[in-house]
Length: 328
Image (cartoon, rainbow, N blue to C red; front, side, top):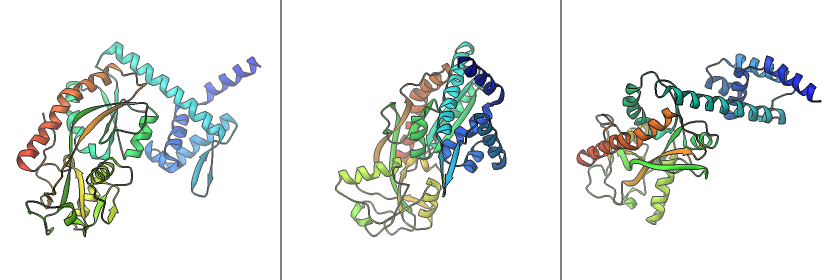
């Protein structure tokens, strides 16, 4: 029996490819062959061919589609688990090699919620300038997607606007995050010195999807004040929300960092009592993460120079009522 197992193992080693496992892993992540192909910059036929080859090699179907839902078979679940083990070992190999090479090579993997995409690249810039030979993989998604990436330990570090629910994480504050009430410059309350939340009862609030960091912070803040949300619409992106506000479809509560200096001049901050919401940006990692030399160096950079860049941008906002992107 041991001999047969060895022969099968050698056969798989000869026939399986990392690309096949990568495609299957992406299918498990995205719940679709087409979306997995997009993620890996493949055509859908190419991704389907890789999956068929893997299924033929393993002698078992890997997934089934019922209606619109894709479900992994038991064989598919086992293959995904094996792929994760292989990728984790390769990642550890990169960590070990980075330790030998110092900061002159390697890949830095960062996951950020969409609100953070406005400032993280500006913090990354000085670090990458100091270490021009490193590669950076920046994954951007909503809170649910980043929670899943964190649970799967896919990246070195994450930016969250509110601490994640996952127990196996470590979080540290890296800078201030202020959530402002914004409206079109044509809003009837624009320019008023003091506005009560009740004055906005007839307005539509434009919100991100349920569970997003900004929405969670707003709901907690209003609850603590004894207020509730008026009617609202859900819009899936910060840019979409800003354009909807410009079109006078409603008001919104957004992070100051999404409003860079000199842009969106037709957006105004409403002077609502008990706002802005004072929160923090959190730098998060999986509790079991083994940092490479590169990831550890970037973490230290974020906790010092990166945090200073963030807070200096908001200090500008305190003086000019208009935030400024981080700069060095």
